[in-house]
Image 1 (cartoon, one colour):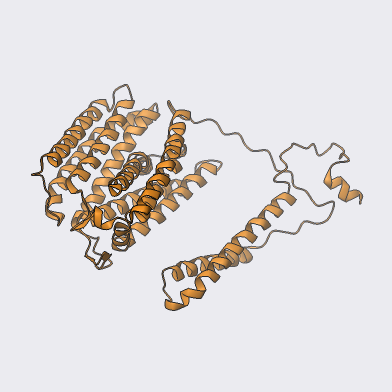
Image 2 (cartoon, one colour; image 1 turned 90 degrees about the vertical axis):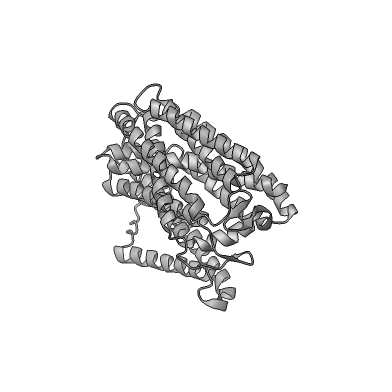
Length: 433
């Protein structure tokens, strides 16, 4: 029975990721249709909790790796390309979001990177889902198909359907958290997006029986009751969201969309369980030993309340409507000159480029070795590469901290240049010496 507890943890983690990260991916895609500085407002709205939302994806990966290694060994190589594309898009999305937030004003490039990466991550997630639902060729518990078996017509439909789902979740979130023009635009866009999502759900639902190679057992009363109850719940929640778009209270559309998402995931689980990877890899076959299952259930189960508490605190701290506070310019840094000694100039462009190229080559080489691109030499190159990369990162970190300390970055106390230096001032001590 422990495998069902592990399966429940995986479903909960994936469900929380779809519900929470789905709306901020949707807001990122909607920012592509915004103009000018409105894109920055969308990013600031998401910056309050996007990192906590994505932590559920990490929990789902850990639960699959430790609790359902058969699924991990089959799905990972089967959908390797779209999965890597999703991870790269998530990284670029975080870069665009954080760099735009740290910039003094609106930066079109970072805002477009945030929106485009949100779209790319959503499309890749849909392709992964479609590739798994259409079945992965298996032999002796491992993937035995081709590198592009995931690229099917049903997978493309899944990707487009997921885009519509995330867009309507993003529109519902914007109506709940914004005022003025942004709220009105979200309310107007909500119903067409909800209609597109409903059409996509019907097409994917009826097409699943033809695309999925497994045989669905709706003749079982319990399975049929769970499935149709979840479908009815999704339809009712969709009706609530439809009525709430453009009307107050503003929280109703988002509550309806979230409920519909949860019901849709439950309906999918009720239709496919206990098969976890079509056409025939069952939950029992894919599970790890009982001791590993028990360790995982306890470990991940203890982590989940912490993540839930963090999510709940972020929602509580940033409750209500979003308001963009005016930014105050930072005071100029106090730069120390080393007691009259000349300060060594910063390295030129060639040195910076060379340093970055070497670190990039080292990182790419380490990734290639970890995938055994070079064959048996990975036995000795892998630990050497890890040691070199770790040492280079540590040296760069320490060197940067020493340079910042020398330039007074860590000394934030305002200092009047006209005031005489006190006896405790290190600059005065060095100068007097």
